Image 1: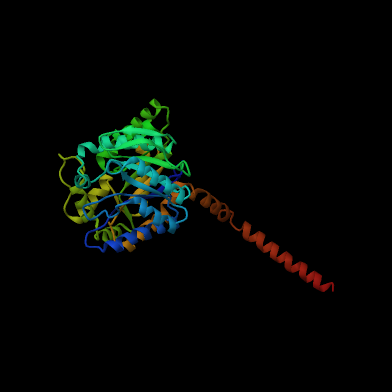
Image 2: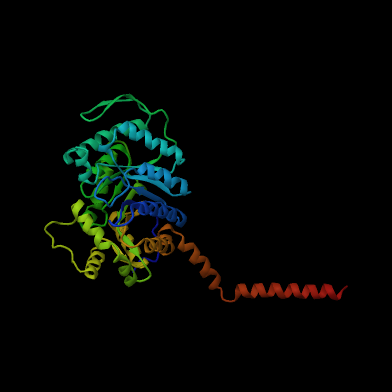
Length: 393
């Protein structure tokens, strides 16, 4: 059963949107539905949306998160919008830093910057980049970008880019959030700690990655301390797949649309799980049971979502933001309803809003007839006073 008391530090909620769309769906419609989803999340009170960058495989259709964010910013009021993540080896760091700062101004401080080496090696191959070079190049580019954001004039020469006294012509509008993507290895945690940025754990509920969440936080914290920074938990974001409905049966029915397609796709682009472990069940219902029981995802009810989040809190000791994986597990209408149901039934449990509301209700209802009696007494007194006044005329 989920805890009755809310988590002491209010959590934030959002989406990590590669996005993952089934092939065969109209790509124009899919992109506009992505924008509609961000608008929906903004209206429901979600806090963040991180938008991916991919160039191949036919599923993750957003080539430029900056262009998408510019469009989404015009349609929303409150939600923060981040690159989730920019593939740094694919860009000259000065040009990318310039675009990020421009977006910070255009969004008036709702911009966030996420950095990674590039998820799809098929993208890197088309650019002639050896996958073994992606992480070193990311670190080289990230160092330059952090210095540029800080207002430095940068001269740097590598085997793939040159900066000659490069300096941004406008300073950032805000002290925008910066996060480094991490999965299982400590490389992302080390980089985030070295530069004092946030950490984006993008495979938090995968069993192998879940086991090292606390270890990766320790690496982040130790590296931050070594370099004179801190590793605040509110800047730690965890991502996992989730779809909820009123019943488990309805959630399973909804996810017949695309869940197996998504995980088949993922098996072809990233290593998942323990190679020596038996493969997950091929039967749809058995696969969902396996995924729910292993904690890999939640396909179920709001109560199951609360239990999953409490499990992550217990494992990590606390974090700042939970991010849904933005993938076509269900069709568009069921996906919108899942986010709505989460906002109605799960989000208040972790933001501290349910306690005061319930306490106020209990105080009034628990008083029995006290408040009704007081109202009735006031009404009868007003009637009696009027009758006395009327009789005295």
